[in-house]
Length: 171
Image 1 (tube, one colour):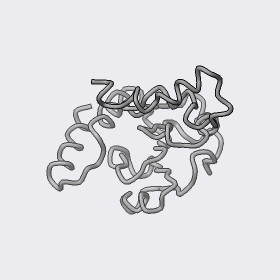
Image 2 (tube, helix red, strand yellow; image 1 turned 180 degrees about the vertical axis):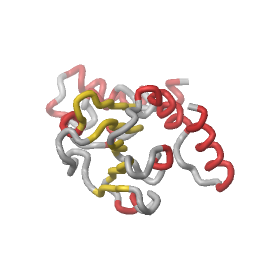
Image 3 (cartoon, helix red, strand yellow; image 1 turned 180 degrees about the horizontal axis):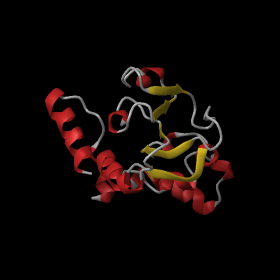
Image 4 (cartoon, helix red, strand yellow; image 1 turned 135 degrees about the vertical axis):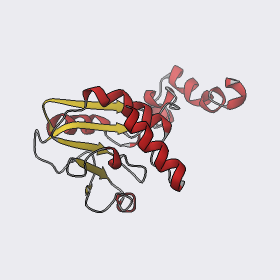
């Protein structure tokens, strides 16, 4: 845990480059005890703030839909430009799969979870950390549902969504 913190702090303070958020660092530190000693590590939705530097380059695989984000991964580190809904890896080929504030951005999170299960080997580890600032309302799908499909209670919730989650009301 100390080595991860030291590496992150030195990278952040010496060059001003943001490697990851402090929340990512805390989540990563929390999974250190369960990180398998061998096997491949897959970061889903790695983005420009990927955590590739915390793993040996021969073990780390960064997956992102954005080619630009993948350009931020150092040369020599494996990267995959693909959707997490169709991970182009063999069944059972990953020992650790993790993502931070990613799953809430995909269209079919259930499909992503099935894909993670498919590529994870027997005894593999998954670390999922959703964004801390997510509101519960979007999970109820009222924002996506057409007005006509909502029941009376759903219409009320949809109508008052903006007011309910405004900073003034929450304060």
